Length: 379
Image (tube, one colour):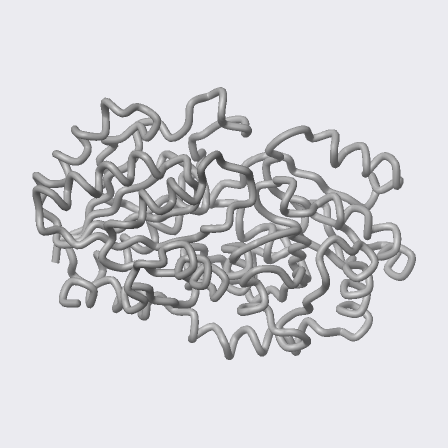
């Protein structure tokens, strides 16, 4: 089977590009011909809140990648559709996560549907968006309306999709689990070197990982730290990810609450080679999100057998099971967050939670997703 993707790929960075790359490799390993039609440029510079849009990683998957589309340039839409059509794929797979890409995706899908018999599958990350987008519902409908299949990875996204797309046949919406990331491999012998690089010894280590945006609640976690340190005086908060916006929102809090000795703040994009260093050096990952539909960080943590303390928002409770593989707390509550972190260490939860993660991980394989994608051709 010939399977095409339309979306970001290396050297573009981020979780979407990594998800597409891993899925493409999995499909190729099963004998399918796979090609990614990627972006020439992803965002205009004035709209991109980060420092750089390219991925500095050296550890990348070898894939057939064709940069054909600049989503904000309509003059690239028709040529991109022509190039995809010329390859004659059986299926086109797109990831949908923000309305910024909806005009380009919607037009390209319509062109392909008009002139080819290609099956179109969207894997949807979000429909309720963290940031405000003008006409978000209208553009989302425009992007998704002509799809043959929608695949969601949380109940909240499934419900939003069914509510928004009222005339969409529910049988065309499939809810699956977000797979674990198994792209990263490290041996336990790396651990001592990783901790040395991060200036960590045997103290309790709390990890906040990924892009730092207001909805992710790092400020709430920082507010919780003084209470955590009252019970765990030598605890360290390891923050690894690039701030989108004003860094002073966080550095001022670190200064205000005298946290400099207990916060390691790496405000930058974390390359593939470094990801394992942060997770393997940490005891628990904390997701203090104000809102969420799902989080790839949860599955990334579980890939490293690292338990998660998360706010109970969106679909996060579908992966984080209270007192089994982590803790769930109410959002926007630094007190609840602090109590959960202290409980985790005081009750020595790591070993028990890690065992649960290891037993559960097989349920988060890529096989169901691959089966759903390939079987969509005959549906």
